[in-house]
Length: 148
Image (cartoon, one colour):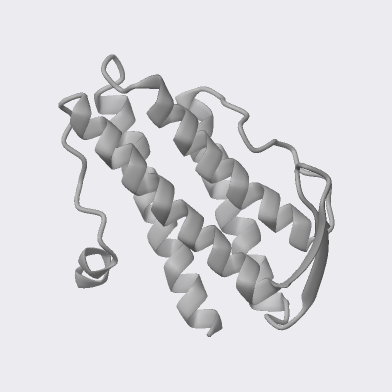
């Protein structure tokens, strides 16, 4: 299970990097909402990792930052994700508070899957937005990643 999650997170790390390159290549045409959603994807990943580690997050859900910071947040998320996957028990229950102040408990496995699923959802939205601005997104299917 740990290897599978590590593979999924490496896949998303790779997709994020490709998305940043696409943004840079089309910087004058990328809609602001696409950048906002990409920041949201990275921030949500960050928030969940910090909940697992019981730390105060550096970013909130909808914080935005320049394109140059996207890669830094992506790399920090990758490093902490790898540590959590390698060292934590996936059945461990994490008690946390949402951004709305509500208290919940979930396993690390469920939280990690939430991060993966959430990232996939919003990357599809970003791709649709880019198409509407005549920017052709790259093929992001998991199977294409596995064929490399």
